[in-house]
Image (cartoon, rainbow, N blue to C red; front, top):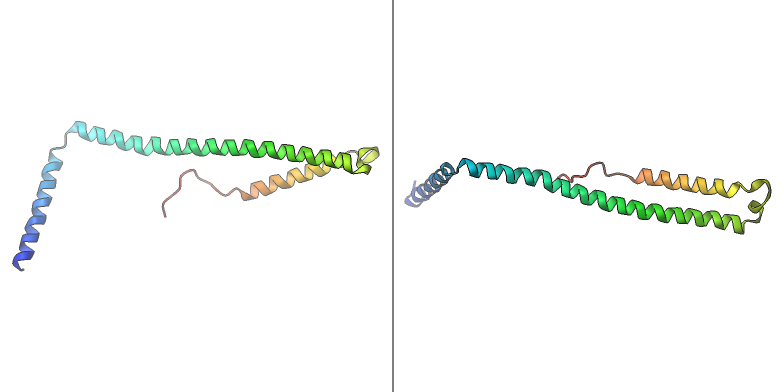
Length: 124
C-alpha cells in the first residue's frame, strides 16, 4: 500500500468512527420523533393522494353522467319529433328502446375502458 492509500483509509475510518459516535448520541426522544415523522409520511401522504383521486373522480363522474343524461334525453326528443312513424300508433315505444340500447352500449364501453385497479402508483 502506498502512503496516499493509507491516508485515504485512515480518513474513511475516522469518518465512520465519527458517524458511530453521532449514532450513540441519539436520544430516545429523537427516535420517537423520527418514528412519528415516518408514520405520518407513510400514512397521511397516501391518504391525501387517495382523497384527491376520489374527489376528482367523483367530480368527473358527476359531470360525465349529467352530460350523458342530457345527450340521451336529446336523442329521445329528436327521435320523437323527427321520426314521424314513432310519434303515434303502435311504435311509440321504439324511441325509448333505441335510447335504452344506446345507453347500454355507452355503459358497456365505459366498463370495458376501466383499467386502473389501485390508488397508489408503484415505482418501476
